[in-house]
Image 1 (tube, rainbow, N blue to C red):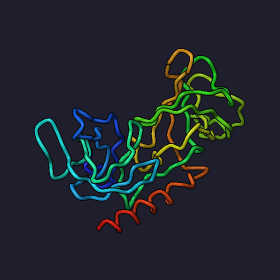
Image 2: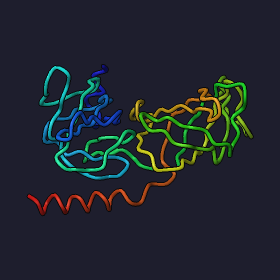
Image 3: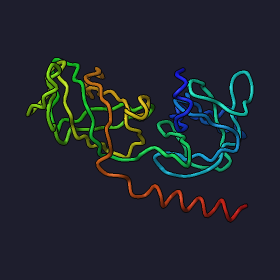
Length: 223
């Protein structure tokens, strides 16, 4: 694991919900960046709900903390709605949330990328239906010149605006490759047809701060 990953904000995409019996509910995944310790305040993205880490479990026993590169199961202090595809993040340095973003896309299939056609996008453990709402330009890989284009052919690279069918948690690829890189999949045959790197959100989800604020008020009332 690169040492720099441990100095980035905590990120753990939830791979699956671990429920061996009714008295235990944990959330399993790989810590892709940062560190997490018992008692840390974390935010559940894309919902924005804030809670605390109660326990960090591994096959070899409980840990007081975990770092990037470790696969762990985390339990939370509060009964909050968390499922596969959500992301646990540092409460003070949350990931972005959007259903529209700009990205660089590398096309990897003989059938051209067509704006408006729906594809599946896998971003970490999240899966959503997306379409290219705008192909801004393609890039000449030899000169880096920006060229007008209506589609992307095999091995071409372009900058696109993408629209998803639901809000997604993300970081820019420049900040975090694991939470900013994605693949595109053909919905008909499940072939991987492209790969991309997120630049920035075009629109933020409006509800995450309100949901976080509501639970924060509840937590303070209980303390």
